[in-house]
Length: 180
Image (cartoon, rainbow, N blue to C red; front, side, top):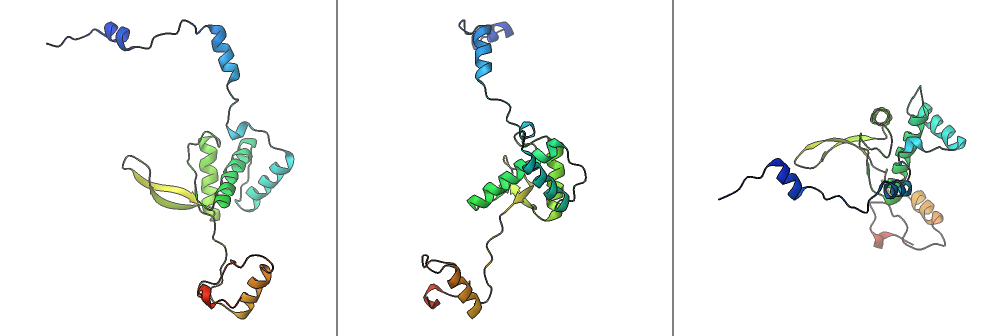
């Protein structure tokens, strides 16, 4: 035989138990130790970075109006791209990333980056069986000569002269074919 518990009995049995040591003073001290907000649009950038970001937005993205939040969000997104370049991986930019900025600003920048050819749309799994298109930044691979010429081999050798032997080789040559 099963007993049905009343809602009050369920709350009493399974509800959270208050800590008697947690006072308003302890709560205030805890809140004071928390870090400041981490949204990028609240971080002040120096004037030189703002100028460079505004110039990039104007020339490359064809942006007309640039608020402080827009410039800060653009700086945060380009910072993520720089991390992807350094790691050699790719960067997915979510439309609802609180660390970067507001949703509307991120969507605007995504559309501008897509039009400029910096972002591409790829179909990816987004969890729980949902597959959809996402905005992806992939670092461009280093230029490699398509055809090995004497000039390209000489340039590659001179570029790495005095360094280690493992420099980049044209794609159509095998390591044993390299005359170095």
